[in-house]
Image (cartoon, rainbow, N blue to C red):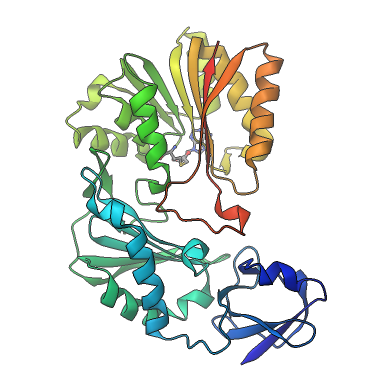
Length: 389
Ligand code: SAH
């Protein structure tokens, strides 16, 4: 097997099970091709772990075993899948939810691979050409472990156009309707990068519905298919969804529809968030609860938006249209925007506006998005509920 030799002193990090192989930590390595297996050894040639080559936006591969004798065959993947499945027993058995993540990359033992379950329709996401080389073995293992109606896939290789589609089983007609905490959502597994619902926000949606929307006017910015609005609508006085994408209107209306809510009773704007702030201010519209869950980066006309640089502007503008005693739900899924930095931006912006507040809840990923204890970026989601005073 090919080898990569660690720089002296770097072995501790990897002996502590840091899973991502970083090029800077390597002293020397054989020529490595996507999907090849290689051994990581220390400068004395002592075995540390076995990795596969997979070039993502960071790292050159992922360690997948600490057993020098390991055989990477279908039964290797089967063992990991069985373990992942056993850990999700709860999600298989609860009422009112039939969509959740079955396998979460490095958190479950293989960086670069995720599998989601949308009511029996499984979605595999391949994050490098390297992991895709194991497709045959992984599909074989999936058939032996998971029950499913169909399997779909998405290739999310860096610098590569999106590809994906149906793999096997019985093809459903999209959209399919899934249920999450007794709310219904339309899902399409065969339409671009996104599916209609971000499963990682399930607990945040539930918290919002249970504690922050009763009788209130709720504004949902960057609303996409309206999930935060849909989960709120039955208890809220009104919901307003704002998204730049033309398609968001129809998708949001349909999501209201599958929950028996007449979309005509809710507000939906296809608009840039910052334009909507201006519009609301001009018309003296205000809200009790404002949800801000933006993409990490976005480009609109000549403007670019980055959560790292611009989150404060979102908060500042929201403060202009929120009622006294209002609630903010502030989210980011950018792995390089740490919880600490995020809280600092929130604190500084509220201080600048002389607003007293309390952080009432800080949430992260749900249990099905199992994270890796020694790999911080895997805890990418931050959702903070603020009570203004
Ligand atoms: N909050 C959503 C997910 C957001 S996905 C949810 O809970 O499901 C990001 C969304 O932001 C996309 O739908 C995109 O169209 C929208 N978007 C990007 N830039 C925007 C802008 N400047 N104003 C409004 N929406 C924007």
